[in-house]
Image (cartoon, rainbow, N blue to C red):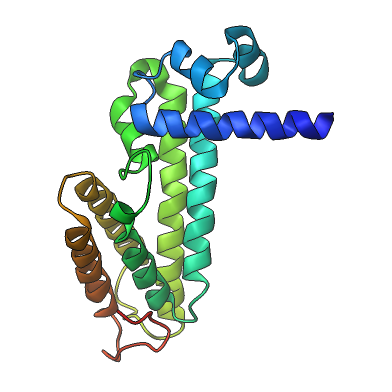
Length: 208
């Protein structure tokens, strides 16, 4: 029984995540949640505390899935820069996936939430900072293994990469077609690979 309850709660959270990702916090009504989760208002509040609580859990779930995908890609490559480039190339396929939105849910939330939702806004900020740290760490790793100039700042590079990822995902939201998004992601990946000190093509990098 307890296992079924955990499963049902997780299933409800996944459904809420998709709804919030598509519509945003403010545009998602309690009626929308009732329909998507197949739960009465009392059950929603009993399970998640409030709409805001459910939204914050959805943000955390979204971020955990995104980080898991990022880390799988990064650590599938011995070369830190090759892993980062592979992650960018993977984002080139955003238009090929059936997603509620191609834009990042955390970024959408950051742009939408205001003073009245400070706790949720800080949550989105913190989760984005966690993603940025993964980028910074891999640039630092690239310096340690000698493939990135030691004079470069990993923090600055990590922030720039996160800005590029945000921009790529926002660009993919436009009606531009899959080929354009793939091409832009490829250009970004090549620019990152150009940072390699040896200037060569890493054998870890996926063929393209």
